[in-house]
Length: 534
Image (cartoon, rainbow, N blue to C red; front, side, top):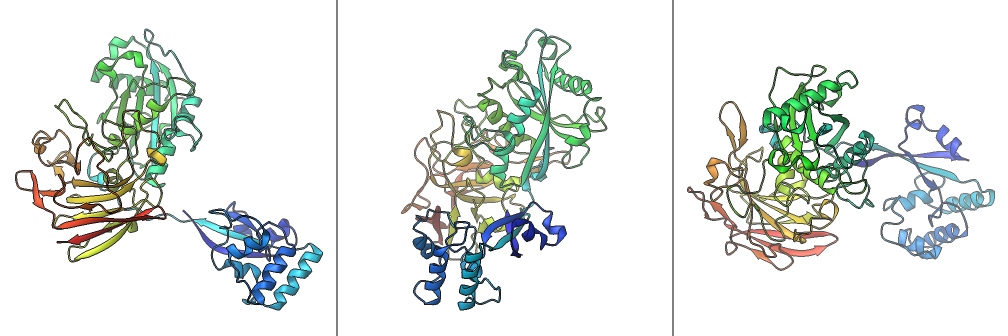
């Protein structure tokens, strides 16, 4: 997030003179940005008669200096977002040509002189990057090698076999662009334009994924690697093949001694029986390259199909990297219907429909909210109104309704409320995903299980404590049916809705929450919701 630090008002003359007046330590920074000229009130990047008319009307108290009035004089249509390089009130500052803190007739005289001499004073502004204060990621309690905040590194081993080659084999440089390239909203695969771009949008910039691709053909035929030991052996074989050409110390983003994550990608033709995408830690302390051990590995047969078709390659591995950060699968095990959440509200990257954004449940655990983006309904309140911004933007936020005391690391039971849209990372779900826009509510129990030698979410799908997924679960969507289960203006969420209850001692959702949620107006891209205690 860029925030204005100061404005430099340069001496009259050209840009070179303007920069010359800036202290050398700042002037060399690329963050200096020219905004225009002092007195350019119609914002056309020049000084002329319109500017004189605007300032004269202001001094005669006929028309105050606002962007609307300035554009009206210029005869140009004011479009949304235009004229915003100066913030409210800065039109007055821009009209203060002698920079004495007042706008008066002397500024009008200077403006006439500047127009006559075509010698305006340039306005420059300095921006400095400010770090957002993201919360500490609760997921760090679970074993994961890929950092969810800061620098995260991925080694891609794009491997085939003597008897199972790729039918389409992009170069390492092409794969690097697909995996780590900049955002491209025109990409036909968007929002899976790149792994880096997707994570940057979802994390609000908290996570910076980078890495490198290595193209390799295995020494042996496919059948020699068709088990867990074989797959791990292939990872080690490929890494060793490049040890003299690469510096693998560069792929330890959090400096914990492990390569953050290694993706072993093989041709789709390798088959699903042994190469269906999956992820897990290696925990082999006897192997290293350049002194770095292997952290999480992903093995996958989700290949790049063509130069223009890598939707599945990117989306699949974004899901698998969620595991490398510590998130479990949200889909269900041992059931004919494996989908963990249904309906228009049920899309989530860690569920079976892994072609959408992370939900607020994942983002909270990954630490992808700033402190002020987490709004908690206080137990002592009888009523509180909250604003929910679009979850697919940097201002996306969440409301937490605790069940009893809220664990400071969000490892407890609570409801989470967010406003989801079909924008950004939700803009191109798979054809079978019925996605909507509106308010959605999750029932969460993120309790951690620590048995002394490993930690996990106690109620992750398939865990023993979930009673075959019938009892407590890490997350559920309320009203979990194949219906439109999003909420909009005028809707009231209360105990009449299935799933809007706390768990009882046996794991059933039967305990009254004691609150209702009323959905208010959608205005300026945000919903108002009111939580009332009954």
